[in-house]
Image (cartoon, rainbow, N blue to C red; front, side):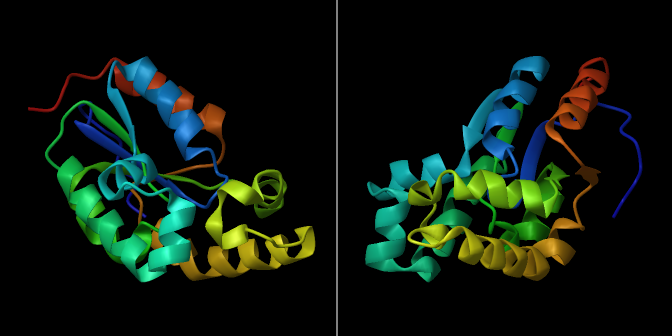
Length: 178
């Protein structure tokens, strides 16, 4: 994982991490701190497809969702002053492109906390729908093991939401990138 510190404020910041890591809620706050626009990749997919994420997974399948994810992500690569909350699986097919076009931050929240958060909202998350808490825990660990190496390619690993906001406060005072 690159550890170089920034010399200027990045034009785009993409947040990656597991479902339940706080990408959307923290991303909104980070965008507010920086004076950037905030976008949520899943919301862009919903808007473009005219279906909810659950409907896409149910009616079209995960492969269709991932293709829509890639298409929507491409549209954000040219936007400036942007914080983008990606979906948990966006790294599966898009990490190289994200690293080329934005500062990528990995929200690496402890797995037991992810399990707690995801278990509270399984109806909103297609991969966890109709699972017991024990099944959610197994699924979260499975996804974490599959994705951890991709997440680790991020420019920076952030271990909680407060650390992300602290980083944003430091970046705020850097000059903007040209």
